[in-house]
Image 1: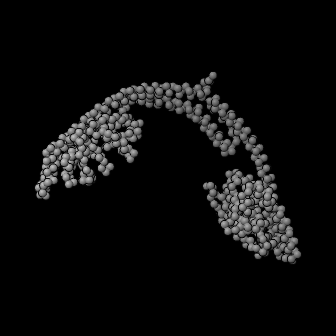
Image 2: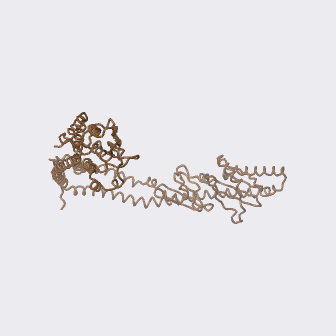
Image 3: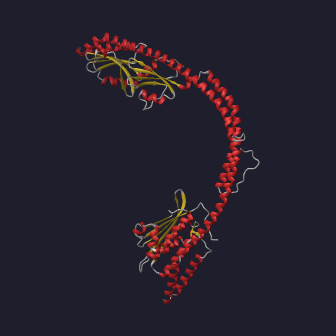
Length: 570
């Protein structure tokens, strides 16, 4: 049973009333408009096309009549010019030109008439409607085209020619190598149709194959070359009606569907009534939605964002007339947030303890063999009575011990780690005099970036262990700078030496095999674990060999981590 206080009941009741009103008006208006307007528009369009069809047909009859008159009156003169001398031929040609000009002087003449004499001499006369560019194109066409002699039954047909992207309709009569013809441009033929000043419909002329010859009030692109393609493109927004024209093809009328409803008073009154009802009903619905739907939804969104940002002190809104369903959601959200808070605190405490223990354990794994080497070096120097070297080594060793036992420090600045690494190399210089060359290049902006303690010193220590050979110079190069990776700032640390480098088998082997097969690489494995534990990524360490010789280590330390960095142990 649905309660009256339920949002479902309220929303369903009010929206049902609105939808019934809207659907009733829309259904009645659509049925009326589709039945009446479409039938009237089709009838009117066909009647209009019939008038224009008759107009075009009359124009063609006039053009054909003029052609036959010119042919009958001038055929003998045109045929006999072939056997005349030059002087007589000149006067006959001028006479033919005069006759053409006289015929073209009429107000209902075609766009042009021509006489092609034997010997490829063409006499032409064009109407003032023709532009100069079109005249030049037609003269070139008439000079080059050969008008074949057609059978008597076909001598009166109109033919379509395309001349420089423009379509023309030709009718010609050829007799004894002499051709008489008349022509009309398709665009001009369409403009001759008296459509009236208020006729804003689209009209298209096409030939028997459906190729578009001319169109008005519509822009054609390269794809709109046929009536079929034009119909597919515009049939959704236009009412398209076509009627045949026997002389060359057909004429098409495109009536905009949007203008068909302009005169329907009933629909206009219906729209006005709908607007009045909407002005009354919609504000009421919006008020209801704002109070009973939008406001509690916004409250839930606000609470969810607060929880997402870590604010777990959510309380149910008090003294608010929210619907039954939303109150249940608020109670469920409060219970969920409370449970998340408890679980998160418990998980964080466990994770912090595990992380601290694992990091300290990994750091302790790195160090023991170094102290054994330092003690052995001091013992060797005592036998050699090198007291100054012993004092320097002890001083460096004390600095090393002070750096290591800094109250459980897990992250240090880049500058401190570099200073400690230099101190370590100084100790090795005492052990291997005149065999060590090192260079450290650090960008100023990277000096205060925090990094895990012993990160650089561990790889330098491995360099001495695996790349140091008796009486051979060891070169170490360290470069530190800020770089952008994946759209975020990183500190790039590159450590290179001139030793034998990593073997191909070791580089290509899995991490677990690298540790078990070569115990000396435990420090590198621990570095991998430390980076993954602190930064939650496993792509921050890359081991390879330099282009010339030696090992190459690349480290990327994020400048700003998402989680809270660990500074000191508890």
